[in-house]
Amino acid sequence: MNAEYQIYLCLILLSRLSLLSRDEALSWRYAELLTAIQIALIVLAFGWQGMAIPAIVAVLLFTLPSALLENKLSVSGWRLISAIGLALFPALFLFIWEGFTFSALSEALGQGIDKLAELLVGPEQWGQLHVASVLLAFLVLANEVNIAMRVILKAVNLVPKTRDGSGSEEESTDNEEFNAGRVIGILERWLMFAVLASGNGWGALGFIIAAKGLVRLKKFADNDFAEYMLVGTLLSALFAIAVATCYG
Image 1 (cartoon, rainbow, N blue to C red):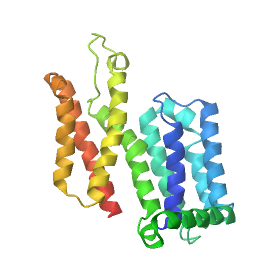
Image 2: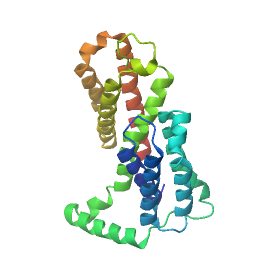
Image 3: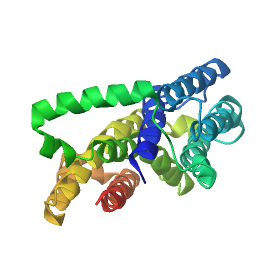
């Protein structure tokens, strides 16, 4: 994957990370706002030519209908489908266009960033950082992996539950614990990725998993929570390993 396609994905995922933090289905106004922001970012970065056209079509197909389809299907389910669609739909047109082409504005901005970064860290070190790849990895491990994990955990009925005695799944789901797991999960996946990408080995990864278990040790008396915690942690590790492998 070239740098231009990585930048496209980073722009899309950054907008989703910023605006899809709530678990409720999007309203039409919010879906239109997210659509407008994503199209604006694409146009600013790549103009109106070439691969920018199917990228804009992808936004219209997968972001704009979110207000309808998140209610028809499920919030996490459609968000996972839309992420895959936004990532892969433009690639279907690579046989027509060679790839994304930066606009004059983004090229000028990129050159300015390069010069500033070279002054701060040196030309050789800056050239070896692969900033777009690292940023893309961190964005994937944040919101998108969190969405995928929620789909998996709900599919196997391993969401954390409250003890209110209600038979309704919405009422019995411990949303406070679920949302706390979102933040902790993002941080642990970032840390796991950083450890693996830096080549510090599997020992450090095992230490991270063990440390998380020690922090929540008292709650392991609840078998349901212990199973949710274990499966969630292992899924986080699996996704971090997969992304680090692709990055490497």
